[in-house]
Amino acid sequence: MIIGSHVSLKAPDYLLGAIEETISYNANALMIYTGAPQNTIRKPISQFKLDEAKSLMDKHNIDIKNLVVHAPYIINLGNKVNPRTREIALEFLEKEINRVIEIGAFYLVIHPGSHVSQTKEEGIQAIIEALNLVVKKEHNIMILLETMAGKGTEIGRTFEEIKYILENVENPDKYGVCLDTCHINDAGYDLTKFDDVLDEFDRLIGIERIKVVHVNDSKNPMGAQKDRHENIGKGTIGFDILYSIVHNERLKHTIKILETPWVDNKPPYKEEIALLKAAKN
Picture 1 (tube, rainbow, N blue to C red):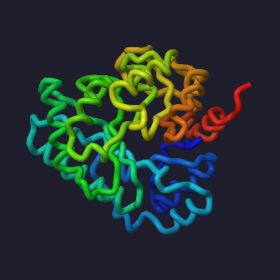
Picture 2 (picture 1 turned 90 degrees about the vertical axis):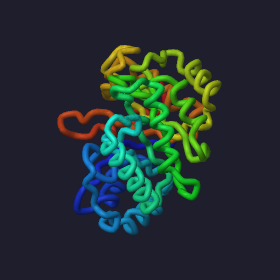
Picture 3 (picture 1 turned 60 degrees about the vertical axis):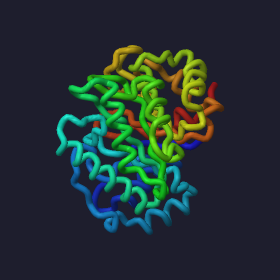
């Protein structure tokens, strides 16, 4: 199983510290933000202790492709209402792509965007236009569109919306999907029938395009469109369903990443990963 969690990237060790944290969780994958997800302040990659981090990854058999980068939340490719806001989003996404390439990672997860005061169709078109401007054929990366819960004016709540974007971007081989269990539950997909959900995804998009699965329980009932993560087995999805998802043979080669809340100001990932990796009684 390829499994890990979101890990922090902080001074003074940055990526080296993130790899050490990953190893402490008995994980073989990880997800990072290259800076705070709420702002555009970024340290140069030269400070990330990249060589030491990669050496430690080699020592512990962690493939660089299992290092997933998540783009910051503040990038909204679906908003064309404010030209300056859109310009900042495009510039920042371009910088993030270059940072992923400099690190040597391959997958960059992004939230598709929100249509704000535009129509949904206008927002989707704005996302396609933005991706076509920024993602280039020569980029040695893959952009993963994350499935969303549908809160507010989020785009990506349905597989059909993701499908439309993927079918209309240039260089479609540069794109895949990050499936989030909390998000699709909150979007209205019945995870008690997960193989049926996968069948629908496969029919519309192709299951081979799922490269990363965010494994999160949900604080909300199915269809709530809220997006509030819960710890594994503590939410409305439940442990048994999440366990069956991470062990589903059809997702055997996907990277599983936990983004569950901290418990008593401590990350729960070592314990949650152990639970998900354990043999079923």
